[in-house]
Structures are given as structure tokens and as C-alpha cells.
Image (cartoon, rainbow, N blue to C red; front, top):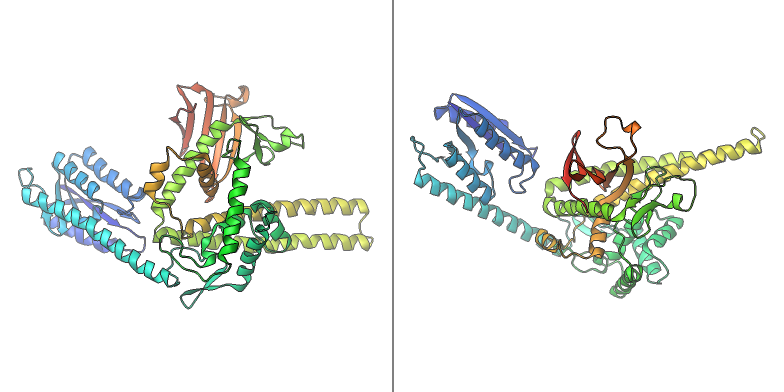
Amino acid sequence: MKALAILRVSTTTQTIDEQKEELIAFLKGQGYDEIIPLEAVGASAIKMDDKYLELVDRVKTAIIEDKEIKAAGVWELSRLGRNEVILFQFKEFFIQHKIQFICKQPYMRLLEEDGSVNAGMELAFSLYATMSKQEMAEKKARFKRAKKGMASRGEYVGGHITPYGYRVENGEFVIDEEESKVVRLTFELYSGGNYSASSLAKELNQRGYPVTERKVSRILAYSGYIGVAVGELETKFPPIISKELFDKCQSIRKDNKLNMRRGERVVLGAKLIKCFKCGAICTSNSKHYVCCRAAHKLGCDNTFHLRQNVADELLWRIASIQHLQYLTDLNENKVEEYHRELAVVEEKIKAGLEKLKIIQSKKNRIAENYEDGLISKKDRDKKLSKVQDEVRLHQEYLTSLQGKREGIAWLLEGGNPDTVEAFTSALETMDSESKFDIIHKHIKSLTAEPISFGVRDPRTHKPNGVKIIITTILDTTYEYVYIPKLYQGFNLYVRNRNRWVPDMYLI
């Protein structure tokens, strides 16, 4: 008789081999001669992530498709799941399909020999399912209390990037003298009321402090700089600025936001929509996004207009998914993954800055060659123009890396008061300003290009749709095709692997 051996470990560092060997031997001892292992490494039953849900589907599909499978076994009940609802669903599924469920630790057989349910074992299954849920809740509560106690004492507990302006020394947060200078200068300049976050970022860069607009906005919003407890763990940091200076800047930020948005509709895709031809930012004319260079006849011939409601709806859809995933998925494994990504980005930035120095040094050599009479003025100007183009392109590349670094830092940073429940309950009533903030935290760019969709030879047909590509701050891409006049009853298609599949209807 055939039996499934369901094997799961929640992290890639755990080994599944010993569990597999013991479970197969155990099932053979129960009278099953053909064992089919179903393995899942790195599948979290607590988070119910994609790998775990895929394992659930594989178990049920195997049983439904192979009628010779008569049993399913696990080494320990938590290997089947840690969610009470999922475990009860598994129990009902096994009973419905007459599948003998066998657990090694604690030992139990769900069905009698005639296929009927063993009432005692069914009760034991239910009790262990409930205990498993309570055990994990208690573990998480203890872990959270311990971390919160350490954080309240200003000790580093891991789980997020050390905020800009601080460093960890002997397990405690201390002020970083160089970075704290930038923090103080940022607040002092902004408190004068003469800067926006964008213009202040430019001012600081001109003064030799390489910061992005996102970095400035995050510095100005971070209350940890005045020594108050921040985040879910209520972490305390040594104060860098006074509460009076911080409160003054918050008042200015609030006024700036109200002045910017008062009396006009919030443009959710502001500064995110890019021209597919020249790469310039697209601006809104209230109904459409249009290339700013094309609109002002500055060298771009892109006449395509992207409907603003279509772009904004897709931006919000992806951003809300990303935000919900962030709120639910930020565990220790994810933190480690983000740290690794951040290290790679930091390495690229360091190498990029060195390359920029090399490119800029070409200017000096060109000038020296001209002074020595080795090249003409015309050649000098031509070479300098070429080098300047290289510098511009490389600076754009570095800016994109810095933006990615800030995005990863935001994902890792503690102090996010949101919860999954609060976010999901607010989805339907969320105002445009809140949507704007969430979109700009998660989305890097959107490009849209007219295409011929659903035809054999696109070259012989006029465009009938728009291909839209949305890129997140972590460089995940989503591809859609929007068709105003419908195609086979739908006007929105999404790329699923190598196929376009109907997604939904957009107004």
C-alpha cells in the first residue's frame, strides 16, 4: 500500500534528511510498502507562506489523483501545520477521502481499520492542534517581552537596521558623530521653513552630504532622534536634537503637505510614471499622464497619454499588496534576506562612487591635452560633452541604488505602528494622502507603452492596448496589458510566467 510521508522544515538551515529517514522507516513499520515523500524546505507553517501553501496543495492533489494512496504520515503534528484552522481542514480532508492519518510523535491513527473515525484519536488530534496554536502564541509573547525589555534599555536587539545617526557599540545604541551632524543640519535647515524635502536633499548634496529625498523625509519623520521610545518594541535612542526643534519641523511638514494638496486631487503616481521613450518623468494633466519633455517639446516625440485612473488603480493594487506582505512577512528570515540585499547594494554604491571618480578624472586629462596643444578646442568640447553624458548616466545609476538602499532600510526599520488588522480594515476608507504615502514607500517606477495585443503579427496592426510595467523598490516587476475596448470580454491582462491571463475589469 502507498503512503505519503509529509516532511517540512521551516528554515533552510534545518536538515530534513534525519526526519525523512525516521518517518519512512516508521511508515513501513505501520504496514505500508511504498512511501512517497513530499518535502518542503523553508516552508513556514506560522506565516503560511507560499512554500507551505504549495505543500498543502501537493498533499491534497496527490491524494485526489492517486487512488492507491491510503495513508499520510508525519514525524510530528506540527510538521503538518501550526494553524488551528488548517489542521482541522486537513483532518476533515483525510476523513472525507478515507485516508489514514498517522503521526509518530505523539503517536496517533485517525481511522479505525474499517475506515471509520476513531473518536478518541479525533479528540486527541483536536487537542494537539489547539495546544500547538497556544504554544506558538506563548513563545512569540515571551520573545516579544524579552526584546521589548532590552529595547527599552537602549540595547540593540536586532531585527532592523540601526537608524541613521547611530551605531551599535558593546550591544548598545550610541550616537555616530558624523551621521548625527547630517541629522542636526537637516532639522536646522528645514526648521527655517525655506525648504521642501526635495530642495533640502539638493542643498545637502551640494554641501557634500550624499542624501536622497527619501532619506531626508525619513530623517524628518523619525521621532527617535529626540530620545522617545519608538516602534512596537518601544526602542529608546540617545537624543540628537531637541523636542522643540523636532515639533517645529513636524508643524512645517504638515503645513507643506496641506499646502501641496489643498484644493487639488492627489496624484498618486507623481514622480513614479516614466516615459518609455526618453525615461523622463510623466506629469498629470488631471486625466492623463504625459511625458514632461514631450509636452514642452524638449526632444521627446512621445505623444502617448496614459489614463491616470488606470495607472493609479494598478499602483495602489501593487502597493497595497506589498504593504500587506511587509506587515505579515517581516520575520527573522526576511530580515536576514534584506540585510544580504542591503550589503550587495552598499557594495555596488561603493564601486559606483569609485567609477564616478574615474569618469570625472577624464575631464582633467582632456583639459591637460588641450592646454598641451594635443587636441583642438572642437575636439575638447566634443570629448567633454561625451564625458558629461557619462557622468550624468552614472549619477542616475547611483541615485537609483541609493533609492533602493533607502527602500530596503525602510522595510527593515523598526517603529512601524501599523498592523495587518488596522491596514486591512482601513483599505476601503483609506484617503488619497495615505494611499500616496504607501505607494511611494513601495513603488519605484511605472512605464507604459502602446502595443498591439492579441494579434498574430503586431507589426501590421495599430496599437490596441497598453503594456504597463510596475517595478517595486525591491526590483520586483509586475506586467499588465490594459485594453480600453476589451479583448475576449476583459480589458486587463496580467503576465503569469510566460502567458497573459485575464485579470480583472478596470473602469
